[in-house]
Each structure stands twice: as structure tokens, then as C-alpha cells.
Length: 454
Ligand code: GDP
Ligand code: GDP
Image 1: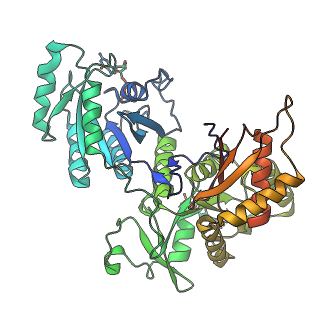
Image 2: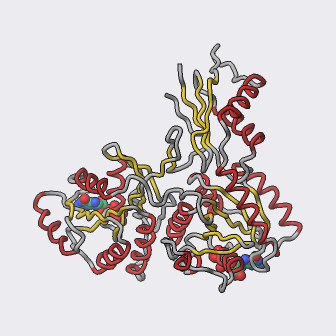
Image 3: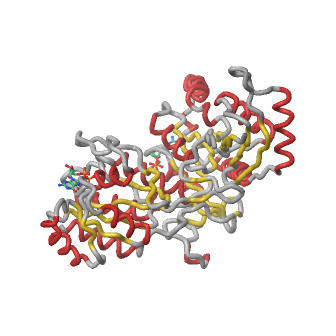
């Protein structure tokens, strides 16, 4: 079978005819230099340049698709995040906290040759508090003589330490078996059911105005904390009334508790953003209308699209707009945001509150698109007409025929086309464009995959 996804939707996997499967998340947590990145490489089974030789180099990629014994999961890697020596303990704990929050199960890596340090014990406290399943990896046990070092880690009270040499691969199989036992089959971070208030994340690079906007829309009095709703929501989520309708603003603690800007803050922010996006159904990506679009901005947008969440773009600080900037902005949008032309843009000022109320209809539209299901009959009628008018180009005397299409899932909409041969990328993009022209999908990523049938 040929199976090509047009738009990657990250960890969402196509389960034919059903809802998208959301893979459970396994996080690798531990102090710097205990061997987390080496272990990640080992688990991913490839020698990617994940172990950084250059200090201070941070990677923006946070999660990778992993597989063990037929089980698939998302691996969250916190290695390679350089912390400055002064604040090292605090930063390790902070980093671990986010990773643990993201995870369904945690592999906690300790350097067995060093033994448990006080920083390790800080992380143990966080792990206990989280009540997440933990597998203890006693790393750098390169040979049988070091096994005793591993045994000493029973002291941490996290159960059996698995002696591992991430470097040589020793013991990693047993460790992964234990991790698979600890990992639930479906992620708790999965797309929640469409009941109750919808879930929205405010994301964007530092200083773009997230906390200003949150304060503007939530006020301080009108925020209803989770306990009142009688739900078991995360306390970092806030219930906010917008025009009389409640919305969950997820992961707002990360916005309210401002993260200091130091080395590694980028990576931390990226992890935080990913956590927020994964808890949300729709993300508002804030952009600063008064300054140039940066790579960090487009990266956040990509994170939302890759996670398969609905998207609204909010150009904030519009009060600082002038004619010169406006002209430049239009060119910038055409040049850098073509990939997300389908997302609605709202111009706002978090400072004055100007147009903030326009966010609600944009959010509603995006979610409506995200939830949309096109009946199979209608979809095939549409494709039939399209193919009749614009057949796939002939290549080498062959012409793939489209047999049938169906929408395999919603949230976001995913389509599967069955064809007699490979469909060219250009033609698939053409189909996507026409799908959007015909059915809308404003504010939602969609994906099209092709299965080849003889
Ligand atoms: P991280 O900062 O936790 O991601 O640690 P790294 O994966 O970058 O590893 C730190 C150092 O420990 C590197 O020099 C690795 O080669 C080394 N290392 C990692 N795993 C092992 C192991 O199992 N045995 C030995 N001897 N060294 C290891
Ligand atoms: P965050 O880091 O994304 O949470 O950004 P903040 O909400 O802390 O805002 C960063 C800075 O931008 C602060 O000085 C805000 O007062 C300012 N700011 C936020 N929104 C606006 C806006 O709409 N207009 C103007 N002029 N300044 C804003």
C-alpha cells in the first residue's frame, strides 16, 4: 500500500474508519549528562545527531515517534537542554516538571556510576507528586561489575532500577519492556471528547502578549478555577467566560508564571507550547503585528498544524500599527504564511482590548471545521466531478484512477483516497485546494492520504 500523508498531523495516527488514535507519551527525564540523549538515540534505533557536542546548543524538536515490541508511542526527549551551571538544580526540576506533565509514563535516568544526587532526589519528589508511572533507568552500567551501582538505586524508592548501558545497548530491552508495561495504550493527552467547554491554548513566542490577552479576556475576578466545576481538570487550566460561554484556557500556569529568559529557555518554551497544544482542541497563535515575523513564530504555527489542532492567528499589538508596517505585513503574510492561508487572522490589541471579541467567532469557526465530517456520498460525488474535469496527468503512458474516497476521521478531518496508482504531490495538493474551496475547513488542518489498490 502506498500511504502518503499530505499534511503531517504529528502523533495522530489514522485508524481507518475510527477516531484518530493518540499515541501515549513516554518522557525521558534526568539530570544533564546522565545519558538521556544517548538513550533516546538507542530507543529510536538511529544515530541521529541528538547528542550535542556543542554546549549551549538547544534543539527545538521535542518529541519523536517511537516503537517497541509492536507498540507505538511518542518519545519526549528533554536531553540536550543546556542549563547554566548557576541555576542548574532549579532548571532541571523545572524542565522535569514540564516533561512529566506532558507524559503518560516517565523513564527516569540516573547515572549509576555517580549514584543519586540531591538534584535526582528533587526530581523523585516531582515524580511522586505527579503519580505518573515511572521506570527507573540506572544508566552507564556498561558491564556486570557495575550492577552493584544499579542496585544501590533501590534507595530512591521508585522500585526496581533497570541496569542499562545506553551507550552499548545493554539492558535497554528490559527497560523498554518495563516502560511498555507502564505506558497506557492511549494517551491521557488525547483529543478530548467534544463535551463541556471547548479547550483553547494561547501560544506564541515570549513577549507577544499572551499574558496580557489572558488577563484581558479572563480578568482576574471572572476566572473560575477548576474545583468549582466539579471536574478533575488540571489546575493549570482556567475556565473563562467569553460572551457568556465557558471555555477552558489550557496550561495557563505557564503563561501566568513567567519563565525567565536564560539559556535553554527556548527549548523550555517549546516544550511548554507543545504541552499546551496537545491539551487543546484549538490554538490561538499570537503574532506581534508591530515586528517582523520570526522563525520562532512559524515554528509555533507548525507545532499546531503538526499536532492536528485547529488554528486561529491573532495579530496582536495592532495599536502600534502604521501604514508602512501594514504594507510590509501584507507582503510578509503572503510570503511566510501561505501554508496556513486557511487559518483566520484576527487583528487585536491585548493592551486596549480592541477587537478581542473577534476571537470567539474565529475559534468557533475553526472548531466547527475541525469537527466537520463530509458524508462519503458527497465526498465521492465531489471527487468524481473533479477528476472528470481535471484528470490526473499521464505519466509514462499510465494514469492512476481514483476509485473511492472516505473521511476516516474528524478532529482534524482526515481523508483517505483509494487509487489504482501513486498520485503526484501536485495533484494531491490540487485535491486539497478544491476540498477547501468546496467545503471550507477554515481554521482546521486537513490531511489526505492515498492507498494504492490494484
Ligand atoms: P544527557 O545530557 O542526559 O542527554 O546525556 P548524553 O546522552 O549527552 O550523555 C552524556 C555523556 O555520557 C556522553 O559523553 C555519553 O557518551 C555518555 N554516556 C551516555 N550513556 C552512557 C553509558 O551507558 N555508558 C557510558 N560509559 N557513558 C555513557
Ligand atoms: P507574553 O510573554 O507573551 O505573555 O507577553 P506579555 O503579555 O507579557 O506582553 C509583553 C509586552 O508587550 C508587555 O510589555 C505588554 O504590555 C506588551 N503588550 C502586550 N499586548 C500589547 C498590545 O496589544 N499593544 C501594545 N502596545 N503592547 C502590548
